[in-house]
Length: 563
Image (tube, rainbow, N blue to C red; front, side):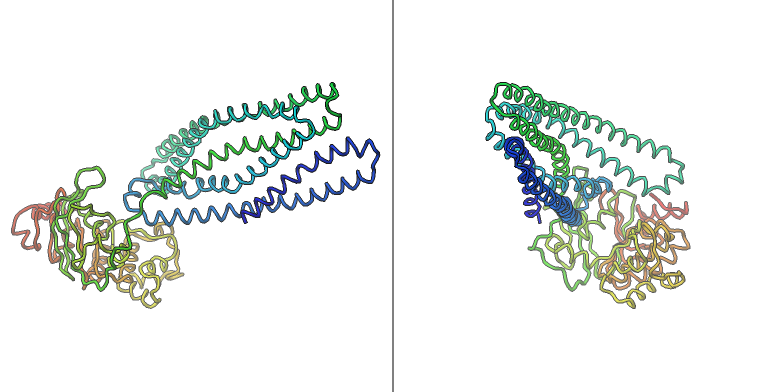
């Protein structure tokens, strides 16, 4: 399709040269020699060629944009697929709104350059070359005089190009800042309204908006200098043809017909030059967008090399062996952690916030990867760094405090646990999560739309749907990361029953602030400042009289969770 598009563009350029040629013949031969029949035939031929050019232009406009749409679709899919493979650290450091800008407006600019650029270049260059050749056949001296402006135009173009590129790069970054601000504010609109902070959000938005306006000033200032300077030079072409052509006509070097042909042909030359000048702006936008596209595509995805083995027939033995971990250049979050969870047993992690409990939960499914020398995490004796990421995560179910539900129906969100599950299996998962009866009271049952992030559901309902999702997945290993800490006491009791059912027969790693929920755990580990300071059953730790006992006494004295 691109080849046909380029061919059509070439034909458009060639047809464009017919008019000055016919004009020259008309003025120099057909009209002076009164060849009226030839005049009519030539006019009809030109008309037919223009009809042909109309269809060619339709083809270029329509199929050229279809090429662009397909390119944008493929690039967007490539980028989105790559994003799905990137490690958690990338999303920790990049705001959602900025990522969305890369997928939308940046790619639009890239494909606008990719499919319009070749068309503009081919049409413009062919027109310039053909007009130069044709004008040289009429009078090569006058042609060289006119084309002497081209080097000046090139110097001016390259002089302003760099400044325009930098300015448009800054403008694109500020646009991403606005998108990030909008995404954050819209997502947190309920918090904003609850704290009556709309004016603060508007002020935050204004900061990004001002940055965009300032960068746009710089970008358009550079663009204005570029266009005004280059347009002035193209205007010089007309001055040259008037003066030089008039002098040549006065001296008898060219005929009036040739002079008229020069005026028409120079316009055919100036228009593609103007197109090339406009192309520079498009080029800067496209290159900036492509650079930002490559910035993400060049980020290394999660290490899931073919050399890794599949984890199969999982029993559930888990071991952390001398594990240390730090997020990038920050201080160590975990230091020399040793833990062993026997298959089918429940290990609870307790301790102050920031101690490293959630980090342990994220390391087990390899959301973050241990470096060499930082210990090892074993599942059934297999180092997770030697196992494929998909096989690890297929066998681990996670229920978190901050439940994430996708836009769609209840059915969509439960079936997310296992897409090939039957409807009866979905019903059974919902029953075991104590949510089936509620769902059946809804007008649309499992096909009820839940809104963005499940906004139409209560916290307990969302949590039970997430539990149903894990039931359907049926993993051998379970992670409960503060799964009930955001719920009221009554709802917590109901959810805890579902969680107890979910934990039965599975190796379970529990992070809990409410110590009453983990009293029956097979083992409890106290995590403080990235280290395991105490370990044992509830009774053993209470007898030991250490940190766990202090936390337990403090929590029940204040009847509140600790931080």
